[in-house]
Image: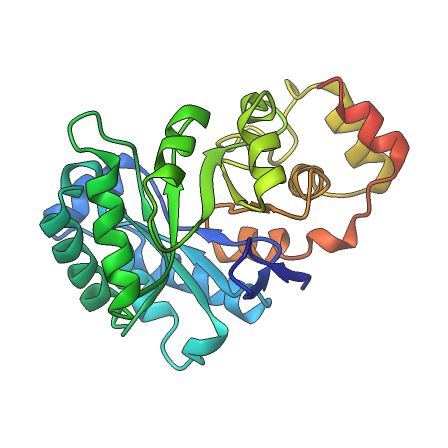
Length: 278
């Protein structure tokens, strides 16, 4: 497994993480006490850990924090980087604090490595939310602060709202099909040392298996190296900069183990030029 520093945290995480958003049916069912494929999901996260991945992303709205807690039992907590998120309806100061405490309890942890605002709010001033986040750092309940689904302007506003600490990461959709952040947000993050957690790195499942409707460049690169399509997608993202961290979903142990072998593929200049046109 390849490890690299996550933003300005000083912590080295695996070059890819594991996402734990499954689907709306999982979220809806879990509120009713139904946890479809729970064992498979736990086994998938364990497969990633066994493959050297030490970076897991979850969120209070996903209802997968207990799954993460179960999967990491017996692991050295200090070697793991656990990220979770506070949802949009909990961004008032007192609600942020309560949400964090609930997440800590569900995760069975004393601290969270990265606490993120899941979506920006049009109702709550960003300074109020960031004040709560910074208080949580002071209390030792979280170690770092991140954001998710913030465009460039909202990112800049969030940074300006900080008084004592820095925003170390942002989480955005980013893949061979969706490169919209390259217009302005990614260059800003590159300049400021902000880590980019790329969710939907496999384009929500479009880049997997043998799909006849895939763009020719992706198929050509995979065929040239006799490599899984997922490795092409992951390595392309990693080629976009040291601050990019793909977080493919961990739902199937076999898929997680395959994703973890991404370094078996090395993209050359010809490959990267081909993929520019996808």
